[in-house]
Amino acid sequence: MINKKTKNKTNLVPEILKLESQIKELEDKLTRSLADYSNLQKRQEEQHQFFATLAISAFISQMLSVLDDFYLAQENLKNPGLQMAINNFETVLKNQGLETIDALNKEFNPDKMECLQTIKGETNKVLEVKKRGYLLNGHCLRPAQVVVGKKL
Image (cartoon, rainbow, N blue to C red; front, side, top):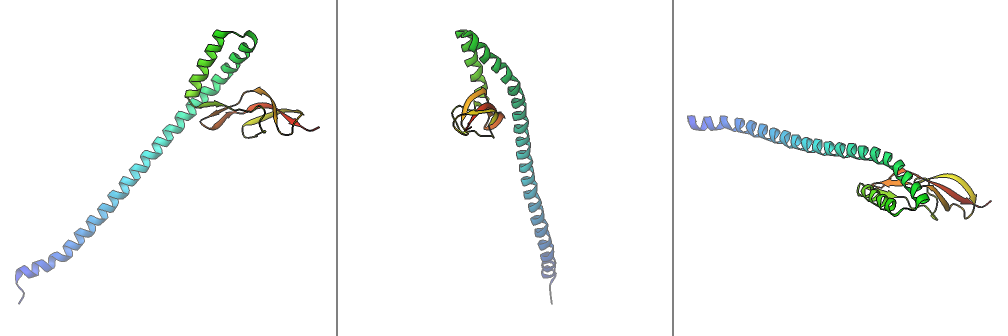
């Protein structure tokens, strides 16, 4: 003869197993939701960085023509005050991740340089820089415009 307490306990086992299964499902959903949220935060941060870089890139691109004008003026004027202003301007741009492409007497690199002309000289060497090129955070913002040597 089975008493009522034993009967009630055996009825509880399937209920407990069912509840444990539900708890497991909810824990899995919570874990997935937290992972999805974390991924969403990462994507938003990457997007934010991308748009910030894009904005800085566009602004610095416009400033390069001003810098080119300063260099041209300094070549003609040789003014120490203007040179000081150029140095300050370059520092501000460098702080934003801008660096000059070092092209003179280097091997021609089509990823960072644009060949305007070839003249007699050491093959594939940059003999003259017509317009400075720049990298922004390691990416080519403006290729250097150069004259490249070629055996004629």
